Length: 139
Image (cartoon, rainbow, N blue to C red; front, side, top):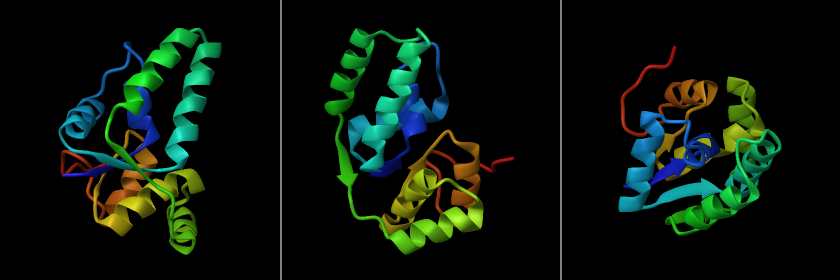
């Protein structure tokens, strides 16, 4: 079953020293089916990679290799967010507009959301959007 992929999960895949069961589950799921993400994912992932190059956690060749691998995954890009709903979600849950875009997409397409962002996960649960892989409660 498709799910909405958040940049926090995709970025986790880039670093060998980061391991998270939700990220592992999402990777297995996207390999078996597909993920959906807002166009924003392209920018967020690349920004995370560049920042980590500057911190010497990743090399240029590591970035290139990761982006190559990421491009082979079946990730459908959504370019049509509902602006009013995005703003409502951001206001209601005190989210960045960037995070609200992922939540709006999951709501609109009735999909689970894969995220490692605690505030986004709380907002998803408050909105009745299920999180990938569990009926987790977020503290």
